[in-house]
Structures are given as C-alpha cells and as structure tokens.
Length: 237
Image (cartoon, rainbow, N blue to C red; front, side, top):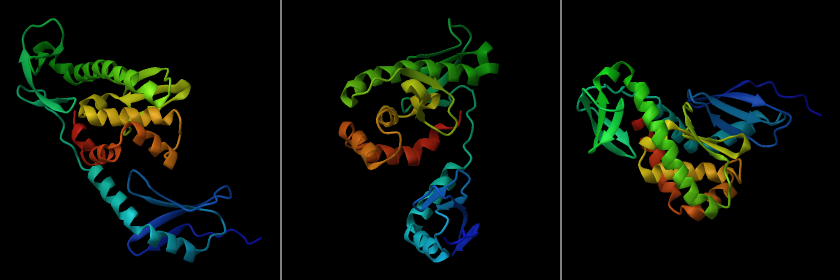
C-alpha cells in the first residue's frame, strides 16, 4: 500500500485549497467555507494531478460560489427606529410610526408599524419578539397545509435566532426557522418551509431530496435562486 500523500495546500491558477485527506472518504469534494476559504477533501491516495483535474472541472461552480459568498458578506445597513423607516413583513415594507400611547409596545395597524415612544430603547427586541410570534403562527399554518401532501408529521415549529440559516430540521422532527423568515415574501418563506419538511424524509441534499421538493413546489428552483440573490436584503435589523 502506498504511503498517504502529505499535500496540505494546492494552488490552481488563482485558487488556493486546503487539502483534507481521510481514509473514510471515497470521493473528491470541494467546499467553499463561509469566509471564502476553499477546502478540497480527498481519499489519502489521490495524486496531485487528479486533484488539479477535478478543480479545473469544477472551476465554474467554484467561482460562482465565491461570488455568492462575496455578495453575502457585504455590509448591510442597520435599521434606524425613526418615523418613516420601512420594516418588512412577508415581503412588504411597512413604515414605522412612533406613538405616545397604545396597549402594546409594537403593533401593525393600518399598514404601519406603530412603536410606542417609551419602547424605543428596546425597539429591536420588540421587533424580534413580534416577528417571532407572527412567524410561529404563520409558519405553523403553512406546515399544516403541506404536511399531508409531503407525508410527514413534524413535532412542531420553533422560531428563533439561527445565525446564517433560514431553517433546520432538529431532533424529534422539530422544525426550526429563523425569525427573519417572516420578513421574506410569502412564496419564498414557503420554499424555506418545504425545504425543511423534505429533510424529514431526506437528511441530505440528494437528487431524491430535490425531487421531493419539486413534487409539491414545481418552481422551487426560481424561489431558491431568489433567496440566494435577495435574502441578504432582509438582514439589517
């Protein structure tokens, strides 16, 4: 048996890869990390020429993913909690109105978000709480619409901070969604929901997974592309 190759870095034109080798791996895989770093995973005995050929074959995909990462990492301006500022809800922007009195710190009324002035110091927390409550109700109703069609029985819906993820499928078949999902247009939020429901059948993004998504959402590819392109626009709260 040949001794494992020790190549740890690989430079192909302007692309630099960190090479990770594992005896358990049988195939080659390229990963673009969130910070843009490139990782090339390979079995121990694959030589450099094969690695280079694989990178060249995947070059267009790599550059596409790097462009997406660069776009997603651009700074997003934070919202200012002043009268007239727009805040999204299911894809529509609603202007903020500051009021002196109302029965709740934050309400959506007559097409405007109304924030009580004494709640201004904790305005962001009030918005997150409002979005989380609305999101849980809206997403739960849509889960009820889709679960029989997708032949799944999730334990329930939880809405919380999920970092960079829009949703995840957790232990016990619980569905988790980022509170920002309710800022997305309804058809895009439904894609996020269907995506996670499909994971109850298929844990990985295999062809079978995408076929299952497509059966209930034939235009899922367009919705997925919209989310990749415009999802960053809802980040700045």
